[in-house]
Image (cartoon, rainbow, N blue to C red; front, top):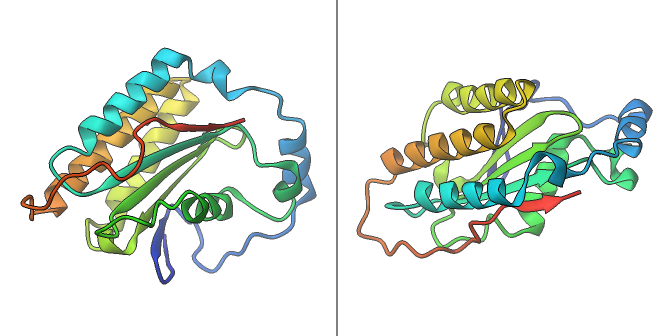
Length: 186
């Protein structure tokens, strides 16, 4: 499902009308999640992800930012689900602040094995909703099989292919407005 706001299009929302309800169970789960993100993503994996972002951004003005978070912060886990957290990071990290409104946030929460794709208003017509959903579903399937790096790299390349097909005006300067390295939040 898609939720529309003034500046973003939110992907992978199962119920458009759903709001993050306070959840003691979610808070408890995230409070006792002790797995460190670095356990799943070694430095060489982070380099592969950064290289995939750089390759996926070539030839169009889209900017992909990858955020991998181990768990929601304890103070936020009670009132905030992964979708709300992804929206918060989209705003805080300034992914929306690109010249052509072409920022994409790929957010992965390891504790809940949830993937959220958030993209800026300049990319609203990039493709059909089903395509975005398939990217997220494929990534979740790979995560279940414990192919963490492969899941992220494949999702990045699929996003890059969509952006390449959508952005037909290749005369624009292709500046890198966002860092290619993934942001790791434990």
